[in-house]
Length: 116
Image 1 (cartoon, rainbow, N blue to C red):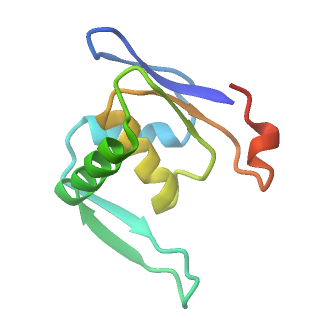
Image 2: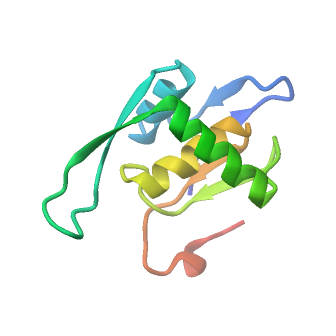
């Protein structure tokens, strides 16, 4: 388990484990990039890249976070790769709600490896 981002009481992010690949996405999101390229899984054919707008990703993140009751200062444990849409959206939700972010190596035994 690696901590990636912690937020101060004022909402300022502190970046931890600077060399983790997810930091690129985190910094892009916090710098207000307008478009994000996401690769599909390829489960129905050849993987392809799709461009999503910040507006669409943010709207999805906020609606999901509200539905799940996310709050600033909560902890987000990401157990799927942020290189794909599921993990990417977990990161974006955590950033939008100013949650502390921890990333775990993807595994088939998620509960066996999750230390809270």
